[in-house]
Amino acid sequence: MGFLSTGLRGVAVAAALISGIVSARADAPLAVLAFGDSLTAGYGLPENQAFPPVLARRLGDMGWNVTVRNGGVSGDTTAGGRARLDWMLEPRPDAVILELGANDALRGLPPADAEANLDAILSALDARKIPVLLVAMAAPRNLGREYVAAFDAIYPALAKKHGVPLAPVFVAPIVDRPDLTIGDAIHPNPAGVAAMTEAILPDVVKLLETAKAARGAK
Image (tube, rainbow, N blue to C red; front, side):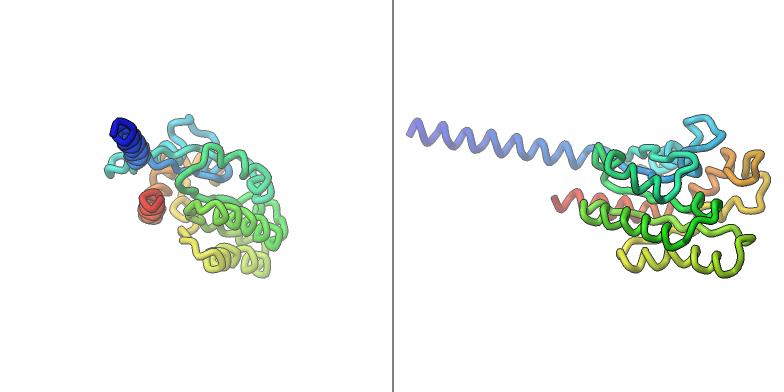
């Protein structure tokens, strides 16, 4: 009986430890990786005024327990994002906001290459079962109708292919709004970041709900 009692106590202790670990994970903040270029990085702005910390504060105000890691690199293309994806996923996030492609378009790089790179990134995230929100980009209209049509079609096509949600064009709230951009008329100022954050917020909340459900299912 002594051996049996000891064994049962061991099982009980192990079960309590497992329960504690599961409970701690459930209570831990949802970790979001904002993976993008200068629009995510916060080009020209103090660190705490970039999109990731602004989004984190806004979500906190709504009652979400979340951290948003700034995975933005100014000047990054889809090829650059694809090359650095693996090490950006350490530590593993609960969800990813994927915002890349603007620099491909600004440089006039082939839309097919951008699509292939984003496709590879989405496939890698899917293989890891990490929920993702794909953020649409739009080509500058002075690149010609053919290029614009090919580039703009990338995002809805990939969202459909991978079954991921698609957020509206990230910079839409600040286009032709000098009051919402810094001196280059491209990147958002703090008011512009706030406007972009509000525009994407409903899609981010849905992403968090998916990530929370996925965590609970583990």
